[in-house]
Image (cartoon, rainbow, N blue to C red):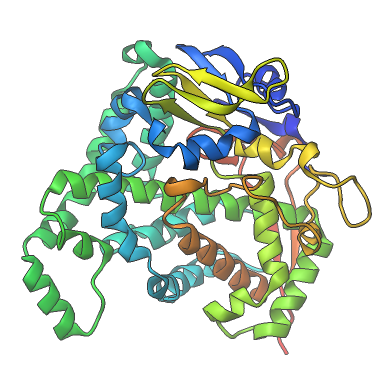
Length: 457
């Protein structure tokens, strides 16, 4: 059964009728009243390039977003605009260089712990839960130099607090001026747990001067951790804390969600799983760890990941705010082709999800072009999206800084799992074929599957 739009529900897509009107192929902007915003313009797909790239300085997160999210995200990269945002990006970019992306030791350490928890005899497990533990462990090791070990200890106190804070933060943000009415005891309790865990790592890094950190790295022969790298450039513990939380949000949830949906679809499509396994075995066998070049040289693996992100973009619905009186190049006039004026503080909504499944942007259905809602990695053998048709990592200057890191982690993890198991059984039912969208998209009831180990030679 292919994924259908009706399966998509949740906070971010609460008003499907307005959004369907906006994405029905017209070129008009549509004004709607959403939550507590008196001016919301639902952006036609043709306006994406303007707000995300060519008119980048005219649109941003806005003061309201920064204020509403500051207790959780502070002034990190995802919650700021202008010079603050540019400084954050400059601070974080070096650590996501290709040399770091190619270092698979952290991935290998935690994927082996994940594999240990899968019995290989078809026992039902929620693979999504394991993926969230795996990505959190890998992310905390990568950022801080030590993992929270949620795979080893079950859900850690930090992991639970992080999830609870996200859940309540999403509710608070949607409540707008009434967020003070949202029960927030667990929110503040969770923030305290998070900060208590993070603070000792920050202190350890700040105990050394930038020069001492360089000397320590040179003597050990090991590269510094992400935290140590940041501590060379800023001694402000609040700045460091905010960046840690922002990167953890992206490093855990988006990657875990994508892996969850990928294996959900592979369990739905056994032939796709078999085809993927065959390519992996032909390339690296059943035991050998893949290199970066190996991953790039497995087209069907890349197609499976791209197709998952096409149907399930991690952030399905997003917004920008006009930072001044401006315009969009199209969306006005009787035919929707004329410029349209945008007042300062107008909220602009856009959806990667609906952009990705707009039938008007695909060839007619045929043997080589399946329906847009069908999961079909093979479509990528003949179809290449046009610019601004496929934006799973957003676009323009604000495109995800960790895109290659995330894609590599997803690919590496997938290869190591599929190498081990020759069959994947679907244990979830129709009632589980639902998706929720809070900060990022995730399966409502997890992904219940069973893995069967390949026979040993």
